[in-house]
Image (cartoon, rainbow, N blue to C red; front, side):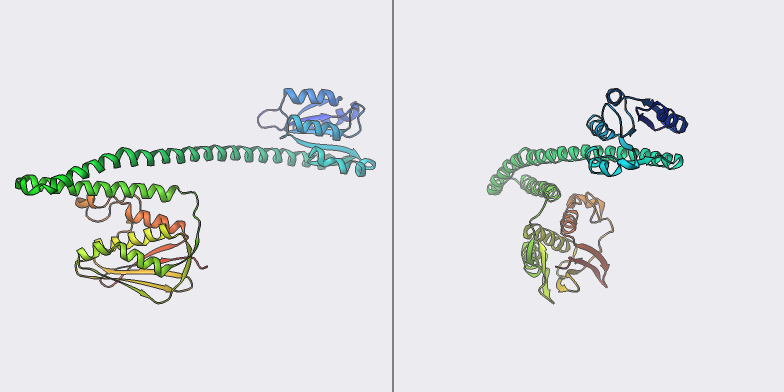
Length: 366
């Protein structure tokens, strides 16, 4: 058999003189095994691995095409080559595909052409093997991803049940204590208030984690044509309470009414997160201006005053701003927004405005 650097070649020819000639010609370039019997060749194929099999067509036990067809069933990766006389070519061509024969070589063969053909066959074998290895790795990766998806689903169930259930109980007790807070001492009232705030924030964190896993894990979305203006107005409504608390005015200005291919729920979630983040960062009593336009594709633009976003603000688990107040932002809100927008084919761009920040989102054209 072959060394690791030499292609293994099985030659089958019932004529001993042809076999000897081929062996002398090729043994310096290949690890050659020879046999005069097609039946013996099939036995060898069950015991050893050959990269190439070179068979004569006319043999008494069976034809070369029949041998190579049987060889295909035993070792499908082996490259099969047929030696045939000029007078046999027409009758053989129709049967060649049955054996999935790589090439046929007409007798008398040219020594250099034969060596070149065999080298090419060895390269073809190696390419097939590498491709098979890559396909096997891809299949393993796919299995691993499917396993991760199942683990993610279990994680969602765990978070939903094991965290949200006791959190609900905690919130209920906090509400009961608040109903009786007039009877509590001042220190206890402060403790109850802080406990309520912590409970609310804990609930927000859980919701953010669940949202990130949900939008990232959904295999596909059923997209349909929807109005970007309608979703922008819905997002504004979701941020209304937070804006009123800071006396911030949110204005949605339609320069056009473009339609986009999207799914309403995730898009509305993304726009609401961007709007709510702007409310949190904008100064009290300021204005937030949202513009919907059609500039070679639907565009959504938000302008506000206040400190600009940092470059890593859209990265998962990156806490932008003052690290002393990182408990106010675990770095998922904007990451979820970008995740959704990227899945919809949209791009985000930050620009520094005169007194704050300009955020541009562009959607693909219909």
